[in-house]
Image (cartoon, rainbow, N blue to C red; front, side, top):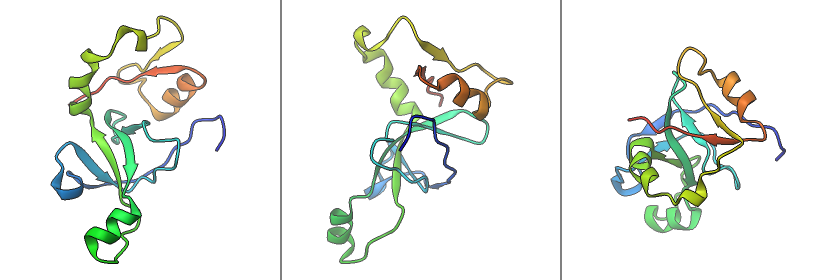
Amino acid sequence: MGDNPKYTEGVVNAISGLKDDPTVFQISVEIQPGNSGGPLFNSSGQVIGITQSSLDPDLAIEVFGGILPQNVNYAIKSHYISALLPMLPETFIASRSIVVVPSEPDNTLANFIEKAKKNIVLIEAKE
């Protein structure tokens, strides 16, 4: 839906996912095809998760008996992701064109979007 970064506001609706999955948040931020994998920020600009998926409509109808919930989306919690980062092969980590998001006070959404344009973004997962 374009080359420029997009911003969407939402809330964490539940601290667990489908069937009480503790590894994900249920969120109201809409996830469109192609934007899963984007960072989920809290109001302080910290990455608290990575957007993952929307509730599968066919699965929802099967589980809930014909009722189709609206706007049910999920993000993997950052502390689960941080445990996976050391396992990434070094070939996934480039030595150039990396934008490191600075700590406070420069860690604003506007600064992040400006620095992230047309770059690879290194996301530091925080608990």
